[in-house]
Image 1 (cartoon, rainbow, N blue to C red):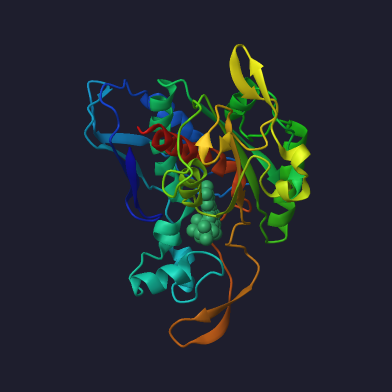
Image 2 (cartoon, rainbow, N blue to C red; image 1 turned 180 degrees about the horizontal axis):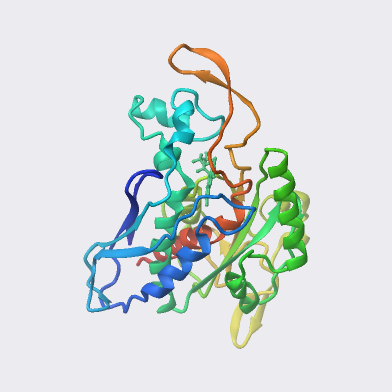
Amino acid sequence: MRHMIFGESHGPAIGVVVEGVPAGLALDLEAVQRELDRRRPGQGPTTTARKESDLVEVLSGVFQGKTTGAPLAMVIRNTDQKSGDYENLRFTPRPSHGDYAGFIKSGGYLDWRGGGHFSGRLTAPLVAAGAVAKQVLAGQGVRVGAHISSIYGILDASWETEEELLAVAAKPFPVLDDGKGEEMRQAILQAKSERDSVGGAVECAVFGLPAGLGSPDFGCNVEGIFAQYLFAVPAVKGVDFGAGAAFSLMRGSEANDPFAVKDGKVVTATNHAGGINGGITNGMPVVFEATFRPTASIALPQQSVDLRTGEETEIEIHGRHAPCIVPRAVPAIEAAAALAACQVLGI
Ligand SMILES: Cc1cc2nc3c(=O)[nH]c(=O)nc-3n(C[C@H](O)[C@H](O)[C@H](O)COP(=O)(O)O)c2cc1C
């Protein structure tokens, strides 16, 4: 399966074409819509004020309720654009957003309205493609779950069972420990009141991938495959598998995952490796954490450069930006993981 996301934040629509979806899948469009609803903007004071219904429409690749194997095209209309907020930023790029890099790459021809093709809004079609991937994976006994693992240094609880992690998807603020979730929300609101933003991380697990998939080599390495999908989610600046960066603080005796036998199957007693050894799945859940930068568009005055004159200047951003990206990014990370898992399985 391969996908291509199209559209711009303030264009008429955004969408995705997914190629190679196996034919004969009874596509559950309501399940696709439920995933989109988890990501939808305009759901409380900690998110953006943009209101979008994000209703998905299938244009091709499904006939009489089943996938045909032809390219599956899904489209989501944009309805709540306010491009005026961006006119003052057209030639004065927002620090740390895609504006400057995109301006140079396109020779100035980019659609600058609302971040154009760099907007976090483009994660809606990613979520739609991921929802299709999840349905394909379900047929192979593979499931994906995720939660906010931290926001601005406030850590969520750890999960013990697959059911516990998968249940988080039903929550409006996707954490295991709602008390910690409230602390996170307060940290977001505090940053917002100071015209600032905060970052955080999403931990995700893929359950049911059999041992033996992948290879140590470039292009087929399971960590590499996942990383490629995950770094394509805007604002992801780090990806750690298993204990990740914490390995640097451990001894081998703490870090190693002892082998054991459970129900006649070889397992590991711990999963510090995140289900991957030698670039190959070992049969344990593939577990990783994606780190998100604080939202680049903050309301505080910032220094930029006027690209017409080459002079330094101060800008103020007036758009409807989320003071923290992380809560709405949880379904996007699950979607990226589901698409990566399909590639690992050779689907
Ligand atoms: C769900 C989601 C929503 C986002 N919303 C915003 C936003 O409101 N304002 C903003 O500046 N960036 C937002 N972003 C992040 C930018 O799209 C991203 O930082 C930008 O494209 C630059 O890419 P980079 O951070 O990966 O380098 C969002 C990202 C995601 C995943």
